[in-house]
Image 1 (spheres, rainbow, N blue to C red):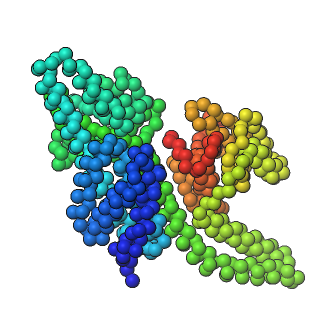
Image 2 (image 1 turned 180 degrees about the vertical axis):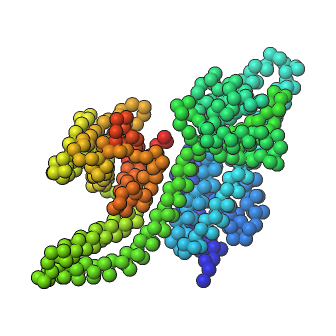
Length: 515
């Protein structure tokens, strides 16, 4: 029986609206937290009903009416464009987990597409309307200035300052382009790119675009004189002064500025949204992997156990000698290895559970090095340990952090030739905002191929003849669960360096790092 999305909305209406209101009041911004709960309840109920008509019946009438109404209200109340967009996005974050519990895999994608389409339509229509109303205010203000300049020239400077102050108060980046040159930019735009206002004005707009987005942005700019062929809202990667790239969304429009044809736009950082979408896709993928793994494990584990048990019984047969006995022993070992792989797959498919407590990272690292020191000695490896005694205690799951260290240490041993040196180092960084702890494990192997750097942390990717490809994926998952990140690079001499970074301070596992 096909899943009824309309019935799902009717049954879960009260539950979804309640959670939407709660998140809106506590997680979006100060302006929403100050609004009365009854008002938010009324507004969210209207939004929910409007989205219901779109998703279930394909009727946009109610949604268009609601967006027109809420845009006027939020603009008049001085709400941030980004906050209202977040308010719209809460709907998706609330409804998808509920859908995932009730919808079969083959129908889930269709439901998600309908919800994403409705959400994209809502945000784009609201952003366009918000910008149009905002631009109308600015243009009306400009016309008043032009009228006043004839009568009271002495007041022109004061009026211009008021206008610029209005734009400077916008948290999103605001800019004006004439003949490919930026002639105006607000404080937020300059800060988003890491430059001062003097460094921005007079530069070509594409100087602030990352190379991978040049072709797309230049094409859109060249088409901008014809609104029918150029998108009003688009995403690209902006270029920061330090060389980093950040996902950004621009809402652009062609108008006149100082009596000249101009492109004006509002740009905002969407790194959190992109990261949220990535995590959502990863969660959906892991949920699917979990279903497959659980199903396969039931079908594989029982016959695997039977084969292993029979092989163990055969291995005790006194008539088996020589090569026959060795073959049986090898088969038993391989059965045990297969069971280990199956267990590893099942563990990886489970949601990550953290048990945070106060931990000393140096102590954890030292204890796990002791566990493998004998193996390293037997295989002829050398260990160099450099611990920074300034490393503070942190809130972490010590057992999970230990798994990370053990995985990286074993990888370093396997990647290095016999007799090589493995260097392990801890370091405390206390500059540039929140402090962080770095743990680096360096080997003397052949390094990581350039084409594999972005792939090695993906589940099931491996370059080993034996292995599931889950080790580094689990490292990344655990460290990100602590609000940290992992970096890998090839050393200048030989080998690779794997470094994990853990934030110092109260850890909720929600910190993000942009590289």
